[in-house]
Image (cartoon, rainbow, N blue to C red; front, side, top):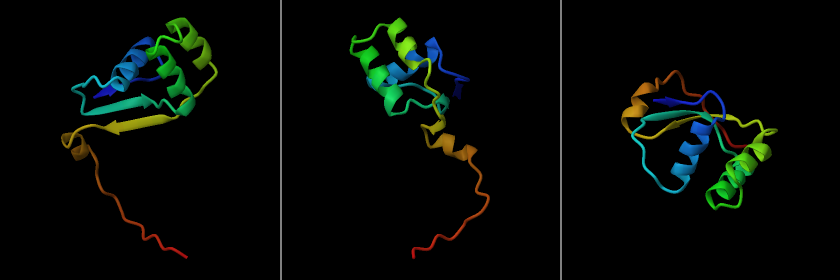
Length: 90
């Protein structure tokens, strides 16, 4: 499991590597989620439109949501079913 408490240099490098298709060996990754706005900044960083310093300047007032991402079938064994709730359409 890989866990990021907040957006850091390591987080940016990991997200950028994932966005360009580099594989990793983690079953579960937890931490800040790059929403549409932050993803645009990450993509600009990847494309060379933004320097690392410019990325952080743009991202400093963005507060990403939290994400837990399951990447392997083995990761799913960490989940435990608690209950089901019926959903009805009106």
